[in-house]
Amino acid sequence: MNFLAPANDFFPRGNPFLESLGVEVLRAADGVSELALILRPDHMNSWHVTHGGVSMTLIDVAMALAGRSLNPGMRSCVTVDLNTQFLQPGGKPGDRLVAIGKAFHRSSTMCFCEAEIRNGDSLVVRGTGTFKYLKQLDNVGRLSTPGGRDDA
Image (cartoon, rainbow, N blue to C red):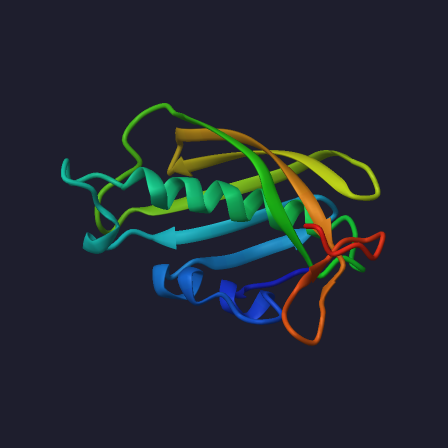
């Protein structure tokens, strides 16, 4: 799966939150994804630098897309664990953040990933995450796992 599109185009049922942030998916293939975001004033915290929630969203989605790209039959996944290290302020309005996610191990139902966010040459955030694959949404919107159970 290779994309250069608003993130909302990648998700089967849309993703209004990512669309509202302005996240773009640059690529998602072979266990690697890349996202970009041009920072706006509403992405800032009270210190007038990137809000940590924006950064955590970027690494979460970058890792999830990297994991999903390894298994095209899985239409979705959910975050089981997310660890984040904030290394320095993310940036100010007008800066462009790039998040790169990599899947480093997967099983039939789980995927383990890492990600980083850069502002230019500066590494600003690193993270790791564990994701559970979900096969599909049933006709009433419940999630089902690859084994067919709906306990996700």
